[in-house]
Length: 171
Image (tube, rainbow, N blue to C red):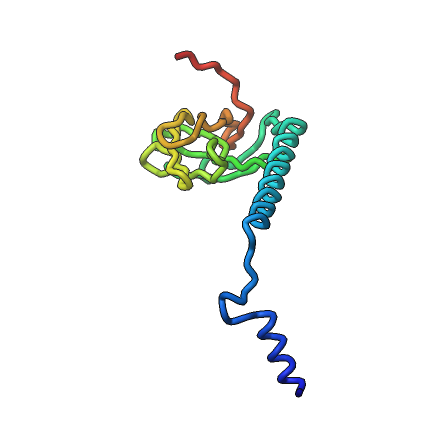
């Protein structure tokens, strides 16, 4: 038997063409696999929850420079990250002249949100969530709570942000 015939014979044995000769997976093996994967997901979710509990989200403290007023046109936005943080934020120059700043992550599943100029809406394209650009409140979709915001203030022509004062809403 030649080397080539031997290779062809072994290849056919390892990778059978006929479906009946292919290795089948029993229900028991499949159930074991699903149990293993489910257990891994459960442990992973537990670790993520434990990390969030042990290391809570960093709070914004102090005043932080974002940009100059004239760098963001009316209806425009500017993405930024505060020094020492990893949370993305978005600064919006509303059509009425106000500046607003919010976390750029949807409160549903942390998808990136964007402002739709002229509508007054911050939109999440992942699951069609919408937020009011003036208040950050949920207008539509699955988000469970308003977008966390920052207070915007000015020092001359410079735009600064600081942690928003927590105000309890009644109603």
